[in-house]
Image 1 (cartoon, one colour):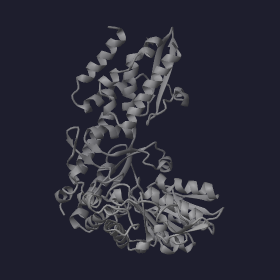
Image 2 (spheres, rainbow over the protein chains, first blue to last red; image 1 turned 30 degrees about the vertical axis):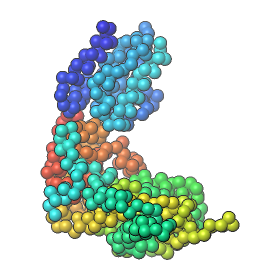
Image 3 (cartoon, one colour; image 1 turned 180 degrees about the vertical axis):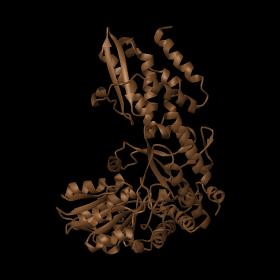
Image 4 (cartoon, chains in turn red, yellow; image 1 turned 90 degrees about the horizontal axis):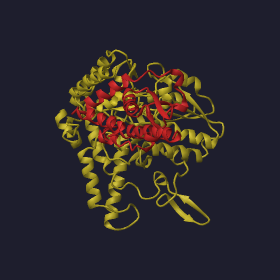
Length: 137
Length: 408
């Protein structure tokens, strides 16, 4: 199993540990709080992910063909979700990310437990990460 | 009527979400459907269905009787005449109809002014902006103060000889404060200005009489008073409705149709083109009867007052909570509470509360200018109906405190 597959499986298993959705949210909130600080000067419109109800910024840097992400949001659960995605895809090659299907998000049941607007926001986050990867393959 | 008795009329209140009892506090968005209203919808649909006015057959007569009977019931409820009641699809449609028809009537001319309260819902802003764009009108914004109260002295200053119309809600969908419509009407009329009242949030909480309020137009939606969605009302003084141009053209709104020119029916039919909501309109009648009952029921009114007093006190004790629409006296507010909490995003709160079984609204609540006024990107709103209990209010504040602890 590849390292990416292992990282995704770890997230799925982590989520499966919680029976209640309230606890899963608590876990997401913790992930949000753990996210590395995002410089205020990077909170620019070109880093905003469009389609999210709360504001989400994503900053991507490429080093040696690998993508490194930083992100922030003014809503903590949204921050937790982007933190979850970054945790899985950070430091991986553009080609590997571009080829991935992001299906682990469905395996943890995240999509159906968000409001429709939030689910749309999640789709926008995934689309943005994928686009960044494709642009750097 | 006891809480148990009233709750039994709304089957949806028995639902559970995520295994927890549903605590529905989004009544300002839409109320639950009254069983008798849904039953009426069914009865009309299944037993007297036909199109209105147009045919001589028995079913058409019955359907027309139901529909026109509903118009009479609405008129009686509001203290108006049947000819002054126009059925639409909702408050939004009522206001769009009015904005269009006023614009085409010649009553508003280029350079004229419309005053709109800062606390209005987008439905009472955008139709007027569209009209202003088409006709070259100027829009003036009537401010609210820090507590959300409409500034009536500003209104007096703002009215000019060019001001033709003033638009305010009787109750703001964000602030929950009751505007003194009667006083506003007298200020406007003294300056030769018409008054249009958005009653969408008021009808469920206040006994509305349009003659008493002395407004010129009044709009509301059926789905916010326990009836079915897709039905709205526009009240207009008959002498004014007579001067208004048609909105949509089609069947039923005409007098005669000739290639050389068409003449239009008298109000209200002039504004009801095409097939109307023949099932939804009659379903409003049982809802109005029920509404009248709830607004006169001592036990229910006392319960609402207790909830309001409890929340006004309890919410303001939560550290970092900012309540919007703070009344000088509780009677100036309906049981609708919008607030923000320092350092906590409204959407996060709504999501956590949802998982605890509490349905509340979060976001801009279709009042972006008011959000800008208070410098926030959104708020959280809990809005109550007579079927909500004090225990639910307590469960809500307990859940809110837990959610804040989780998020901070």
